[in-house]
Amino acid sequence: MTADPVPSVLALGPVLPVVVLGETRPAEAVPLVRALVAGGLRAVEITLRTEGAVEAVRRVAAEVPRAVVGAGTVLTPEQAVAARAAGARFLVSPGWTDRLLAAARDTGVPLLPGVSTASEVMALLERGVAEMKFFPARAAGGPAYLRALASPLPGARFCPTGGIGPDSAADYLALPNVPCVGGSWMLPPDAVRTRDWDRVEHLAREAARLGAAAVAETVADTGGGAEGRTGSGTGTGTGGGTGGGDVSAGGPCR
Ligand code: 3PG
Image 1 (cartoon, rainbow, N blue to C red):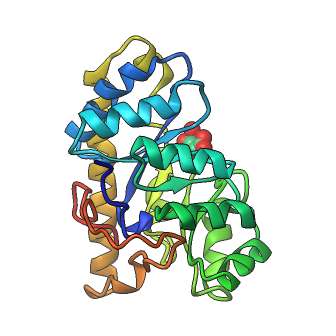
Image 2 (cartoon, helix red, strand yellow; image 1 turned 90 degrees about the vertical axis):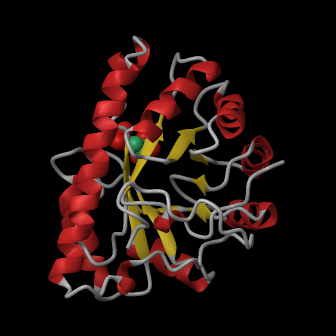
């Protein structure tokens, strides 16, 4: 049975690990994701950049029930369909097209479409999509750019990814329009290549702590009112399932 879609990608937790399998075989995605989950990062995006990536999604969905697995780098309607059939509970794309939005809606799984300009944000808001990936975050302007979008585009919420690491994640998470950040920093290629799952677990734990601390700090700064930062649930999905909504080490994302 395919697990329920998540209601909101941005509500999965403050840190979303991005898995790029490279030479790693699909079966090895299972211990890799188990290490992330053990470290406190239960929501995981597996990018569809390698031949075995859909199979990796399928294996993780079947063998790591504590994980909430999604598919990233979803570029085509066909990939959206294949990822959902494999068990993906959410989809992420570096950009978007109307065809892709429609295909994601048809799967019932929320899609986090990528943007890097104000016009793209406006076009998505026009289409009823309020949750977006900001990509490539560092190259496209980083926290300063996202801060500048908050006032004119208050309806949009972002998960920045691309070039984010432990030194910069908190700067993004301090922004009112950023409930979570994505990245691969807890999955160094050499650790994955050598199957150093202890190291991955350790880095995941540090990332989860960093996310939880950023959430706590923001809640304190805003006098406890974090509701405005919560993923709005107005993504492109239509599924009504709620399983897996609270998956982060520090509770659901703001
Ligand atoms: C990506 O799509 O590659 C993600 O944004 C991850 O980027 P990173 O490897 O720079 O964290």
